[in-house]
Image 1 (cartoon, rainbow, N blue to C red):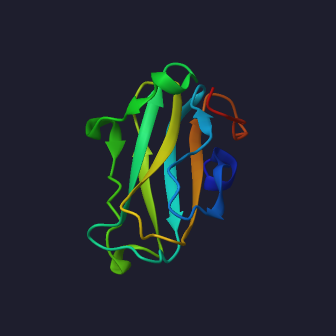
Image 2 (image 1 turned 45 degrees about the horizontal axis):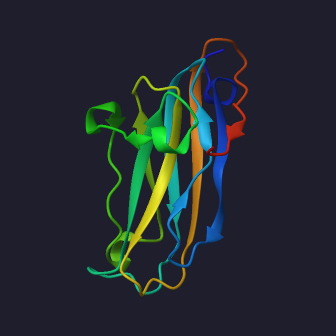
Length: 145
């Protein structure tokens, strides 16, 4: 079938929550069996965000689920880019990138700089598509080991 409903699957990598300035790693998505993965980060209004107090969203990849094995995804392996959230005009939004790299495992790292961001709900969703078998069943997530 040639429709989005049957050819994509969503998986929550980080349930929306108030991280209150806490660096956080999302769960891991296993990309095996899928030709494409979109990573979406949903950010509510951040309290205290400015040029010195900001949130950086980083896509990471690895061949294993070991914490120390993950590295930042090269710009050439992403469609689009995450932008630093360093003003109130950049929060209350969804940022999305497409992962086209060749590593099996992908996750999101949320890195806070400064100390005054006191509130702000953040969530992460992965959408897989072009599965090797249909209909698409979104893969289970894995915790970092």
